[in-house]
Length: 328
Ligand code: SF4
Image 1: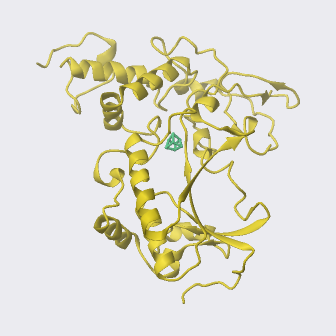
Image 2: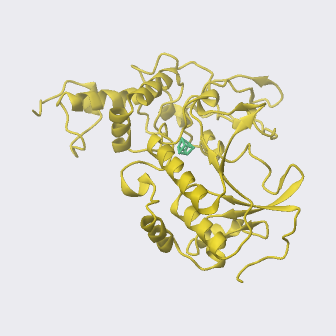
Image 3: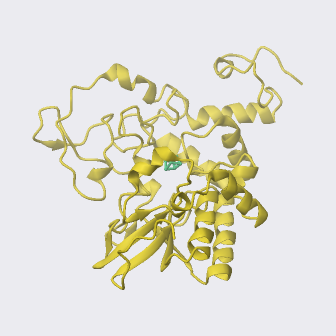
């Protein structure tokens, strides 16, 4: 049998880490149909607040359906993990409002400062040695500070705010899924082997594989296209493959204008929360400087037929001056 490693014994647990994407779901089929050992199936959730999931509501619904499919087919309950700290969920909102302690430019002393690069390690997870801050470059931050108008009220706030980042470490929220879970190789003294949903035609991801991190799809030469067909046949294609619904957080700063428009229309309560965060954030929602309130105004003008959704002639400057023309 391809790729069966001889480290399996009772002290090892074999855990499939799934994202509910097509590769993950086909991977489970391969594990079971090819006779690989499987003890547990886990997935990692992101929480926006203590009670609201961070994934798009349509994805949350889909994951429930997929979990039920997995239970019926394999008789293994999918375990939902999330970032925890001192027995509490680590949520986007908690990190958003956290006031980080930072080293000043001199190196030794800790102080709270507005505008420095957020470090999630100040809040949760293992303590990482902090390099002395280089001298700040205010010009480099300009795009991230609120301009005048809605959202400008708390521009002197010390909280993290939105996780938009221009530094190489990336946005702090990206670490919500990876930093606070069980050790990748042990759990409670039990050694584990992880199965990852990496397909045979994703060679860029092969570097993370080893004896303890296996990719059954790679071991059996199964490519992404076949994974998609399998999910389609079983009615398990995530909404992100079939609709404009995004496979990410509903509050994500990386989502496009269409997804934001849909969020506002279909989930007004989530949109209201995003607007509240926008008001409180010292950092603009988008890297190009636009705020959630900018989008809200744009969509409102669309609702009132002053603007056409998706109009290629749209310019943000239209929101600042008088609208030159009423389209309808
Ligand atoms: S980058 Fe976007 S999708 Fe990814 S964790 Fe952050 S908010 Fe969620």
